[in-house]
Length: 215
Ligand code: DX5
Ligand code: ZN
Image 1 (tube, helix red, strand yellow):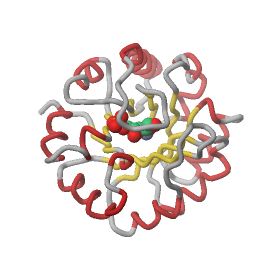
Image 2 (cartoon, rainbow, N blue to C red; image 1 turned 90 degrees about the vertical axis):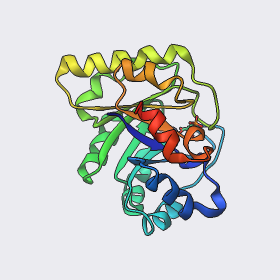
Image 3 (spheres, rainbow, N blue to C red; image 1 turned 135 degrees about the vertical axis):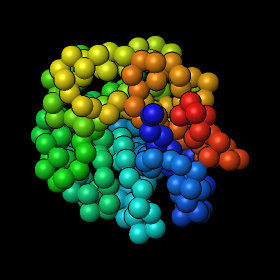
Image 4 (cartoon, rainbow, N blue to C red; image 1 turned 180 degrees about the vertical axis):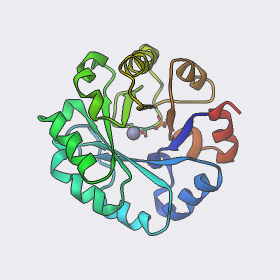
């Protein structure tokens, strides 16, 4: 069964502690934390201070998605803040391998993400350094967008590549995922579905999570 990683970006920021509890009680597997710098993406969200405050109130697996330029500069800060996994963008790193190695050296799961226009071939040389590959199914920067259908095939390509190389990698997709379109992603090899609006805007997150898992 796939894991669900609700994106906190869609939560009510005035009461984050209870929002996290709502999805944790609802059966969420991970918590997806979207960090944006206003440079790599045209939006700003939150940083390590917020994450370390949340860490004190939750034992969930913190799946940190860094949408920032040259993330290598901040890996230690996010480790200290309580990240369990750190995913960086291939488009944002001048040294992709060093960045992924640094994440692993700190004992965290390493993730590499690609924007919709970046081909899967770009990440092939780095797959051995990845615990997670995150396929963006929308342009990064904002929650609540529609999934771009052409990105679904990239999930299949990543999953086939990992299988061919015998690598045990979590294949995650992010953006516009709903109970209606998740089955096509699962059929193409998805292991982890990020869902912001579909979970946090639901009246009953547990129902939404169940539907997303295809239960
Ligand atoms: C977009 C973020 C996503 C987004 C997902 O840049 O990386 O995690 O918040 O939200 P929904 O599920 O609402 O598209
Ligand atoms: Zn994200």
